[in-house]
Length: 335
Image (cartoon, rainbow, N blue to C red; front, top):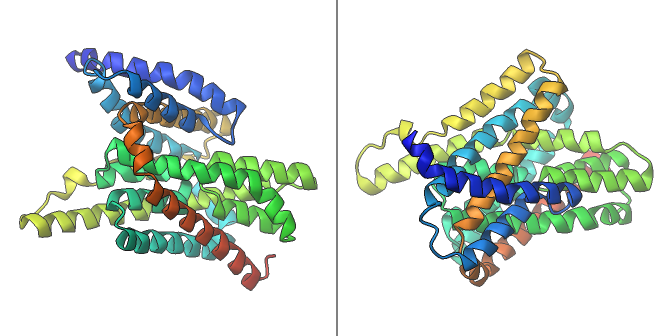
């Protein structure tokens, strides 16, 4: 009870920021609630210097509520449906993820970009934007400024992709199936995939939205192996650096196991949309709350000064993913 007294003000503040950001995100899905929340948090942090009274709650939201959002995300994953309909896109998904992570690794070394920021930008670009960053950040012990940096980069290219991909797809002569694969594999965040596919359907009178969403959900499953590998790598590095055995239990991403469990429950018990729908919405709202908290803990001036290299990395990952997606579709005869 005493802990909640300490956290209450900070949790309430994040909620107050998240509510209007959530509704703004509904009005402008191409931008999304998380972006509005993180910008509002950073703007408030510029003028509010002494946040000691709310800091315990803000820290709690930026970590624990973020992990809860990932767990709830699992209830939207019917594994049977995702794997049945998404398996044809697996070669493209695996290739785009590999290329993005490779680009992030090369640029991290070549441009001396901080490793945690590079990791978050790499997984955010290749897997599922903010959700992947939410899952990965606790595993690599990223701080709020590193999370804010990567979220800003990812959502910048989400917006650009949602706006230009329908026109680009038409220019390239993509079929409806081809555009569904293109949007599902080359756009980072679900809201932007939905925006781009909806725009395409409006122009062409097609129904690519369902196909793009399935491809996107299949990509989301990559959260599981990526986070487990990163946890293992972090353990090995810590052991090598300190010369002592690190307790895997302390850094193992158990919330990812709960994500898997939630997906299994949805799959085995065939949970209806009336149940999974509200849980998915709650997951999205928790991410908005967490982004508000992260914004409150972020120095906007520092973020702008150090943002050039991560933005360039995000651009390279984005171009690499889009190029590989189109190339493999051409080779596989989908286009």
